[in-house]
Length: 327
Ligand code: BTN
Image (cartoon, rainbow, N blue to C red; front, side):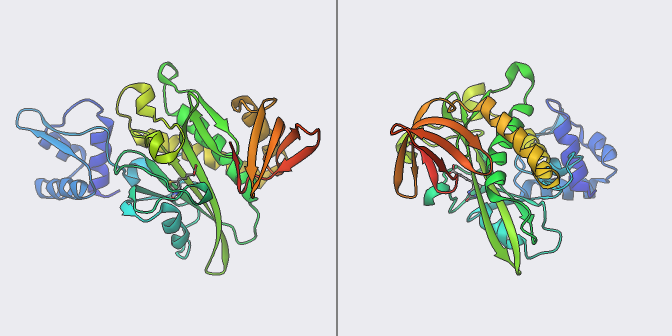
């Protein structure tokens, strides 16, 4: 661990308190010059530090993204083993796909404070002000094509809902629901979206799992055409993104690992998890898919096959998640 990592860890873990400089230096095992260098480095990485002659230094909360705070002791096997944080990229999905050319990219979580060209489903834009939210893409290098895209898409929605909730104590825990195929809702408004894509890089199949979570800001309905919310709007205060990122990575790692080790049992569990959180089963909905509209009662949501609708005309139709949206 380098000195900047030790220092950010110490500052972050002393939640409300201050560190006297000499105390911080000895805890980080760093002399004055080295400590200064580390603090300068943290500032360049976007951390805001507050200094007081009497009480020392502390980290302003919520902190900027930091790969070490995300990765440290994260109980994962594959997803989120490593993280990399950028101030700004075009789209984390593109950066993640390109990183697959490098060795050891598998499982990498690519995060950014801002995107110049964040993408949503159906060619829509994904809007997020700098430094407010989670913009993250996970790279899964899958040369043998073992990970079904549909299952990864559906499992990611569930992982986001579970991971967000796991980041909070029961008394403050938001209750997330799911809207097929992969919207995560809070109090009926969109909290998070998922964009799973497959690419070829260096001759190998790469699955990129893109996740956008509104933590401290959400775009107005007039800009995006639907109602969105954020965790801070629900909790009434600015929210630290780090525990939410970690919670989501842990759950995603569990679900992706489950699909790859025992697909049949994972699919059953995903289906149960979805049914518990998705208010759509047995409800009447209209679904647009590849230029057609289907209206009827939702009978089942299958992580591999898609959604089964009993249409008003009395026929059963299966609609794949790819290219579908609920109207
Ligand atoms: C949706 O339309 O609901 C999907 C939104 C996905 C947004 C995320 S933000 C991180 C990643 N990078 C992108 O450009 N898009 C995804």
